[in-house]
Structures are given as structure tokens and as C-alpha cells.
Image (cartoon, rainbow, N blue to C red; front, side, top):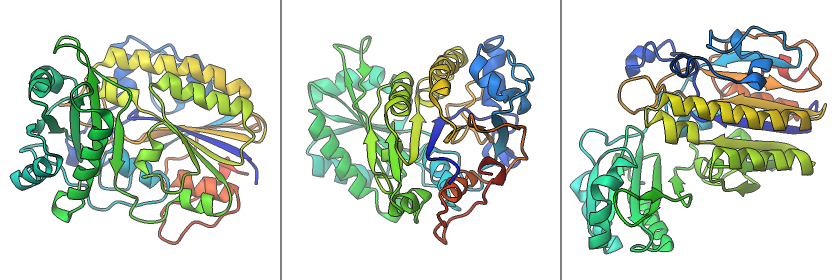
Amino acid sequence: MKFRRVFLIVMDSVGIGAEPDAELFGDKGTNTWVHVAEKCHGLNVPNINSLGIRDLADIEGTTKVDHPHSFMQTLRERSNGKDTLTGHWEMMGILTPNPLVTFTDHGFPKELIDELSARTGRKIIGNYSESGTKILVDLGEEQMREGSLIVYTSADSVLQIAAHTDVVPLEELYRDCEIAREITMRPEWRVGRVIARPFIGPDKDHFTRTSDRHDYALSPSGRTSLDDLKDHGKDVLAIGKIHDIFNGIGITESQHTVSNHDGMLKTIDLAKNRDFNGLCFVNLVEFDSSYGHRRNPLGYGKCIEEFDKDLGELLPLLKEDDLLLITADHGNDPTWTGTDHTRERVPLMSYSPSYANGTKLEERDTFACIGKTILANYGIKASPNQIGEVIPELIK
């Protein structure tokens, strides 16, 4: 074992250039990092810059630097998709050859909606694809008057249910989502996630979604690297929506977060105060949810800069036997058309004070190299179903 503690931080949706097959997804020419930086006339990211991000792309505001304590490379996604579940699952060894079902164009079938209404005892309104903030403007007041449930989807494989907490108590909303999850386990309706979207506020001009979102995800389709770590007595500490993404499977502890900054504060606290032995797995969702889907490149850039400041607090806390991995799960280029994720490569920034000859490494053809390398660090053999190869330079 070279590293006792591994920190894996996912900058949700911060891709770094179109995949070779991006044209099949309508995403040829996308590059979240580069296009955000262009719209912001440069990014102020001194800590990420010091790791060598400029090795991967000509990002305005960054410079070429020597980075002996970090390795830089890109990873491609082998799974057939560009969403949160397939990206995170692939990091931990799971190949998803068939994309998850979506209902973007026509909403959910009448049979599904009728059953959901009958079992929850509430009228269903909406049932179309829309952004989570706009649908509250469109339907939030109606939902409050009727005591109904707003059901909507997006370009992802997701069924979302929104309700005002003064009208539908939070625990009831969660129960309604559990019913929806049960219904959508049928093969023809099998969405990746059901999401509870509680909101507050007096009227459409002041509605705000709360931090009590809860995801009801499919369980991974096979054993993941998290299962292997846990079964060998390692800590698997989940921060943010990691617990939801893996449906709690393979995780030993989890912490909810309300923002990227909160997620980083919790990570910094662990680095300072917890001598765990295993993996701290962090998802920072605001890049994606607040700025990528909203097609807000300026907000996206500010969010990256705020993360960089928090990273500056984390780096000095890492010890010789600590490894920090920073990556993404897909792209969401806010300069692109529509509001969907984008099919992109992701960066893998690997940092440890014990590294002495960091450099740029070759691109790998799957995110699963991350999980395989973490397992190899602990001398754990991956379960046979898992894809990916070890990146030997990271654990020599």
C-alpha cells in the first residue's frame, strides 16, 4: 500500500473536450473547460493551474508549469451514455453498454402517470421535459392550490417530482418518490433516477428549491470497486450525492451536502481530523445542476474559481501517504445547444506530496482506470465483472 487515504473528487460535468464518438450524441466540438474559460475571458484558478491543467487543453487564464507532485491525463468513457450514473459507475468498474431509457420528447406514458396518481392519492401535473427552476414558475402556484405533484423529466434518464413543503410534507414527498421508484423498475420504464425536488416560497417569483433533494437511483448492475474496498475492510466515505448514485451499496459512511463549498468543507475536515484507511469519494454537483443545465457559462466559471479556492485549503493538509484524484463524470458545456449533458473526455488530476516526477500521462479509454488503480494501491483484486486497467505511474 503506497497511500493510506485516497480522496476522489468529482467536479460534476466539468469535461475537457469532445469524445471521439461525440458526433453520435450531437456533441462534436464541445469542451466545457475551454468554452467556459473563453466566455469568462480567462479563469483565475492558481491551484488547479499548479497541478498542470494546461497540459490537457489551452484553457484561457492558465499557463504551462512544472508539476512534480502531480500527474495529468484525460480519460474517455467506454459506456454508452453521458449521464451521472453511467459516469460514476464506470469509474468504479461498471460498463453500461445500453443507454438508460429517457422520456424527453413525450413525457411519461399515461399508464405510468395514472398508476402514480392512484397510488399517491394526488393529481399529477406537468409530465414534460423542463428545467427544474422554470417548471416551478410555470406550475408551482397550481401545485400549491391543488395539492398536486409536479412530475417532469429532462434529457437525463430521470423522473423528478416537485412539491411545496407547506402542501406536501417532505416525508410524504419522499414516500411518493419511493412509489415512483417501484413503478419505474419495470424494464420499459426503468429510469436511472427518481428525484424528490421539494421547494419553498410564497409565489412563482420567489420559489426556491431546498437542499432536501433526495435521489432514488438504480443499484449498480454489478459489483463495483466500492464493494471490493468495503469487503476488504477499507473505509468508503461518501460526500454529496455519491450515496444516492450507488444506492448506498459499497459505502460505509455518507454525508449530505448543500453546496459545492459545503462538500469541500466536509472533505477538508476529514483531511484534517480523520485518519481513515480507504476512499473518500466526493461529488460536487453545482457545476452541473446550477450552471451547466442552466447554460450559464459565467456562473460556471465563478463556480470553478470558488472550487479552486477551497482546493487551496485542502492541498496543504495532504500527507505523504495521501492521494488526491480530481476528475469529472461527463461534460455539460454551457455554451452548447439545449440543456443536456455533453459527451466529453474528463480530466484526471492526480496529486500527492510524495510524487517527485509528475508529468502528463497518456489518455486512457475508460473511467474505470480510477477504481482499478485505487484497488491496486491496497493490493485488492477487482471483481471479475469490472473493466479498466491500473495506471501504474500513480501508485509506484
